[in-house]
Length: 241
Length: 241
DNA sequence: AACACTTATGGTCAGGATGACCCATAGTCC
DNA sequence: GGACTATGGGTCATCCTGACCATAAGTGTT
Image (tube, rainbow over all chains, first blue to last red; front, side):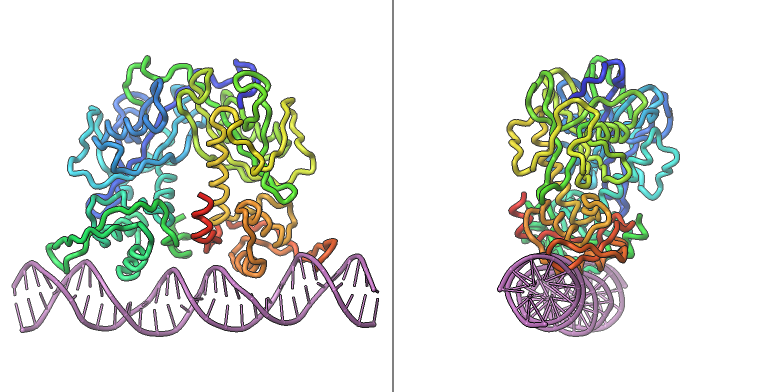
């Protein structure tokens, strides 16, 4: 519903951008894709990748386009989800810029950052990110994205979005351990995820590792939700907030 | 991060609005505040209340201002939360209008709709809403707001936002029953919510009803999250999606 | 006063889910 | 073969849940 407020009271010259928090897991660590800003403001500072919404483009299309430009991934094998919109006046010194933040979870890419974009982009372990150095309000966005990702692992099957198919149950468990930051009992974890309907589809294949017993391999099932959920315990929740 | 895309490729003349999905519980039914549009497009059709973001205003401030204009409520005793942003081109025939949707849960107001706004606003039971008649893409927004509200009851303590303090456990249970659309076992519900830490604070008072045993009264506690969650069963979840 | 009626509150009990274990299995490496 | 390592399967006590039953504390009726 559009109100009858006089036009001059509206925010004028509003620009709308989409920023992306792209998480992946590399070297058993949760990493986020950061770019180095090539111009003012915040020149030289790390920032989340993003860009303006173009004419005729949905917000999702903008996000997918940016993601493709930065990582070379198409939208088929990844999880992309709107996080939140940030629009405080003053969050961008150039004027009123409202940004729709998206959260993307992508599997470990063989190509480091196969972007067509010329800007310097790199994966940074989340624990190594200097939040105070991030441009704009991206520290806030990244923190909220991290908490959303952590809680989504509890209730949904998105953890599998981090894995390249086919994957073993241990691969999946490592996703949880890396994102949550503590270890899970392998046996109980197996019981849980194999018991959930349509979470995992066994392929029948096995993967022989360098050491240890070969692991059965799975693909992602069709279930978007994990029920019952796989929850962090109450005490651990406390410590993470 | 702002890209180096030439300015003319940006969406031009973008307007940003905030739309509100305001839920309350009246007459044991979940109701949503709808306004009747006073001008084109969609003149005369029901729509969610909302308005343009003004200069110097945060998105939250816009939402609180609109909420106050429509209901007369101040922001202190209500739950206000960003839902999602909708920005498909063509969702508004006048041009590119991106709207940030908010979800508000308010207690039953004594004044019907004490808004300062002149537009016709009224509470409509959600089950009576003709979704196909709603202006813009408000049917989509309302549906997603409803699902968010339902799931938030599971994991958080927001249900108490529907109650005027002090309230009884049955008042709170009725919130769950009305929002979820099925009845809960009174005894099990009591065990659950009284067992949760800092959800309910007993006042020591009792309320003598017209019929039945007097009920102990409570106020909202400080806990934002409900742990362990109070979940809809798997079968009921299915039927609601 | 006794009783019916309604809602609030409290308790039981079986089944399911969970966390903490243990142990066998199936590979590699020495 | 034996050490090592990770997978996979199992047990068991405990907690949580859902389905019930029972009692409490009011009002209104007989």
